[in-house]
Image 1 (cartoon, rainbow over the protein chains, first blue to last red):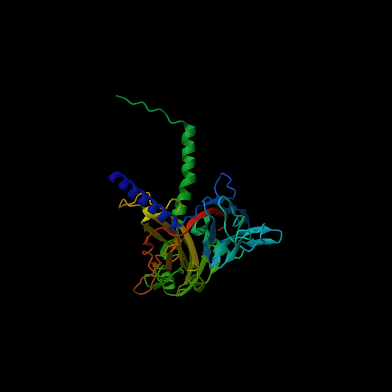
Image 2 (image 1 turned 60 degrees about the vertical axis):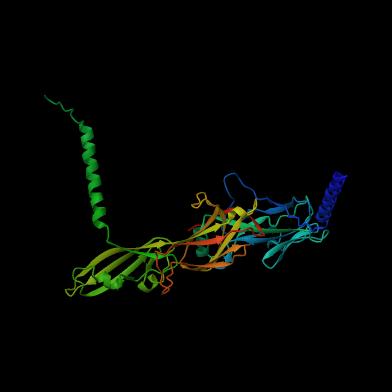
Length: 172
Length: 240
């Protein structure tokens, strides 16, 4: 008889724990993978000459179980207050900075303030599990407005210039 | 005991004498014609000093002559061409630079004497090192990005694990090199621990420039941030 009561008590405890787990708001952490689209020729990073461009690019895949919102911030070195590298897209009409291009298939990146936001007309801006964003940019350009002295100053900071993306993903 | 010397081949001897004749005068000419040298060290961003140990350069130039009396004419030449003294004082070389000084002194006897001198300006640059502790709390692929701002520059550097942390605790380090003198702010991107001020080459007491103060170390706490950083590299082809 005593064993029966113990078993019942344990069963009730397990039920209570299960209910608590179900009712507790779960915060899923977004799992996003960065995909580098630029060409690496095996001899190191692509070379950019003044006024020239190089292929580059970064896209993101949602590897989590929940949908998520994404925003990225482009971080590039500046000399004389001017960015050394510009990320964007080479179109027939010329170079378009990232986040200002035409929406493609209802999916695009749009610039607001210091960030570029992933937008999706069908999902209300959510990146669904297993899906991949369009490239944030496909071309990188050496800023044409840099004077010779500013280019030399950029060269002194390092022979390689890095374009960083700070990625923030929020699961929903 | 007798030592038999092998006679030196005549051809070899002739060649040795010929070589000695060719090289010796050339070497002598080089050493005797080498003009004297003045040397100063400045911080990147500073102008060429027009004084050495408190004395103006033109006064020092007069002292090159045994008798400094008379009318002195100076001409300065940089790798880009001749320039007046005032323009020399506005030059801000980005790397070590030699300036040629030609001085002509017309003495009281009417005789003009000439002297040449090289004014070598050495340029040093600054380095800011970041050490971020608390990296053990970082999750998987999360990395830390630091930003340095000042003197018209904005530079980003990713902090990487220190291969030899002295304390045994994991530490991330980032380094900003090749900097001109000035006051900079350094911030941890995506982290909430604010900005830190850094004086490079600038004395806090009187704002003068000191080339000895060319490196600074800043300490940050590298807790887990909300952002993750990825990057792509590009090589610049910049003609100097």
